Image (cartoon, rainbow, N blue to C red; front, side, top):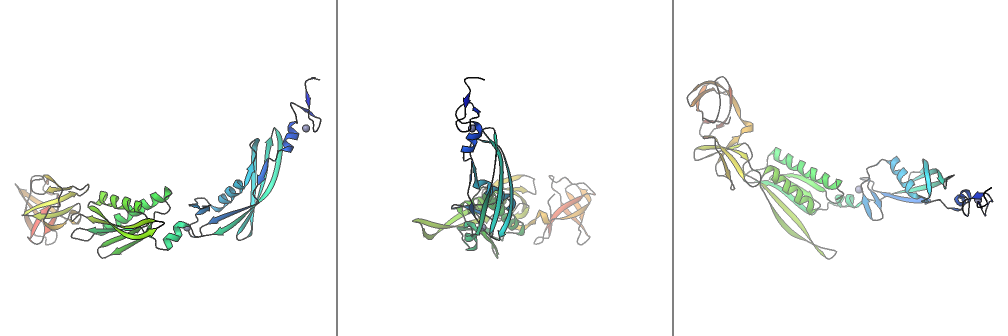
Amino acid sequence: MDIKQNICPKCGEPSEEGLCNKCKAEEVDWITFDARVQCIHCPTCGSLRHQNTWTDCEIDRDKLIEEIALDAVHIHDDVRDLKVELSSYDPSPNRTSVRVDVHAKLYGVPVESSCRVLILWSKEQCDRCSRYSGGYYAGTIQLRAEGRKPDEYEKERAIEIANRHENELQEMGERLSFITSTDEIKEGIDIVISSHNLGELISRSIIKELGGKVTRHPKLAGQKNGRTVYRMTYLVRLPRYQKGDVFEDKGRYYEIRGTDANVIRYFDLQDGSLKISKEEPAGRMIGNVKNSESAYVNYINSDIAGILDPKTYENKECILYPWLEVLEGEEVRFLRDSDKDRIIFVG
Ligand SMILES: [Zn+2]
Ligand SMILES: [Zn+2]
């Protein structure tokens, strides 16, 4: 026997120094737990409240019970090889009792324990749902168009853009940025929003995609916690012309090719040149190429094309400009200028 070997003062077994591992493990309070835990959740959207902060809860109930129970159990830092088993039942609709069985090793000695955590469920409307149901708003995006009404496509796109930004901000944790309501009115659409950030993002994205301008009109809404509160109207004015619109100006016809980034690009349907303007060109609206008709080209005679009018089945001779490459026997797309009884090829 090694004369240097120590003896555990508690049990008399050999030990390296002081208490042996078994007695050390017995002395340590290696597991403690909270017997009752309250969990507040929103009955409308399922968000959870921790102290005064609400967060969206993406996990299902079983997973949540597991998380709450594990949070309620506190394990000593020296514990190793932890194995936990959970089983739960609901003694009443607002309570869940979770049995937690723990097996582990402490200083190499196997230890085990079990405890019960009672989860008390309570419901409270969250910050977002209470604002939402109270019709809270910080501003309104008014979608309008210059000299016309926004069409179905533009209205649809604006709503899609608005929903996309709302989802993005919600996913980023900006809980209080949401769309309060979307109202279709005679002149366009009003999108009511609950934060200025959301209003800025939506209105800027709409003009980036559909063209036009945003003007902001703040209105004093009162004081809150010593701060002045403004409500903002974001007036989004879409351009008079949309992509594909054909208009007539001084006997010439043009097709709008783009209205984004504050620049209007339009195509001269006579000489095939592309023009760029900061201002909206004046002119008389003929139609949009997406509503064009198509006709069969019977013959081409230098700069004249004879087409079969699909409405009257008559042969019509129309000017064929060089930029338009059409062959006999092919189809060509056109718009009608009914005021001047003319057919305008749009390619
Ligand atoms: Zn001992
Ligand atoms: Zn809620």
